[in-house]
Amino acid sequence: MSRTSFVLPLILIFHMIDFTDRKTLNFLRFVFACSIFFVCVARVILKHRVVAHNDNTIAYWPQDILFGVSVIYHERTYLEYERELAEREMKSALSTAGFACLLSFVFNIHIVMGLQILLLPLGCLDSKLFQKYILVDPAAWKALKKGDDSARGFYNERISKPVTEGRGGRGGGSSQQQQQQQRRATNTSAAAANYERLLRQKLGEHIKRAWDAGKAGADFRPILRLIEKGGCEADTVVSEDGPQAGWTALMIACGIVSEPALEAVEELLHNEASCLAHDGDGWTALHWAVCHGNFPAVRALLDNAEDCGGDAAVAALLSAGGAGSESAATAADGTALQLAEREAEKAEKRKRESKAGEAKAPERETENVHAAIAALLREAEAGLDLSSSSNSSSSSSEEAEAAAAGAAAAAAAAEVKEVDEID
Image (cartoon, rainbow, N blue to C red; front, side, top):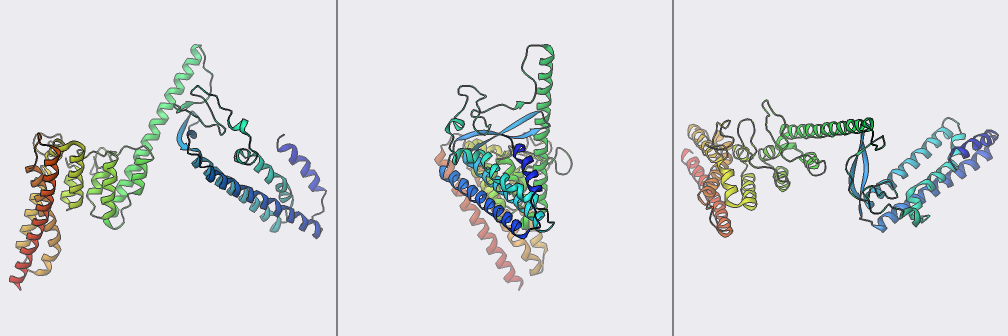
């Protein structure tokens, strides 16, 4: 029986009630409060039973309708779906009750409150969560079509992994029906391509926003969320041309010296971001890290290359931008080692030209970092042995770190000595 069959007689009955009588109105409000209390208690019990049941079975839930043509299915557990459904139904019931109270207490329209006395419990009884966990209807819950890909469950979910489902039309043998199916397939592909394009555009906007914020406020969480949960590729570029051509999330994370940026570098490498992707200037993520003096990012890139491909991957990373590499045509700065050595020479030249101690202070950290990076890269390049075992690879990495620390300490000692001589 539908709700309309209850609503129409109730409207007629409430029209005959004298709401100007204070006792009648107070009694109606008391019954309405009891109805709200019953619904809230039922919803709380439902959510508690959902959590206690802890059903982590995976199913596929229809979520996004693309222009009325296709349905996108998302993989979720029953626990996640039912907990979200319980919260959504609780908010819906409370908002309906609040609206009825507003009409009654503010505008003196009491008929809506009277209707909700019956409709709120009926809505609770209509809930599939209530039917599953309170009424306990195993027949409805377990009525699944076993053995084919279209098997659906109690919530109209799919039990087996589906493909994108087209809407409308029956499968037939006529040419007209086949043409309709082809058009739907074309529309579905176009809609999916547009959806992916919008996701890539959104990721590019977050990458630009993180770079503009810099180390003070760069937020990589939206970027990682789109890559890990949104299905975006980790090597998605900001744009194909212009000054930001070829920029990836890994590059800008390597270009920002901060703890959140370093964590983002590790997460992006874990999500298989390419270290060899290059921007419009032929720079890889290693070039970005070297240019901005990000020693931890340089070490993370080298360690990742060694873990994933051994000495061959490290050699490819160190040679990127050099003669014969894929990015050599656009790389005016050579390899990352050549860039680090030039930056160290520039810093040394600035130090020699500077005569005041105040002018030298801001350069100390950068000079030390670039010297350490250059030493680390030279050590990594010298320790390459494509025929060696993994033990020799790990020892060369340790020697590179020790050499980097020694170079940084030596540079700092030299600067302190020069400052003392000037004083």
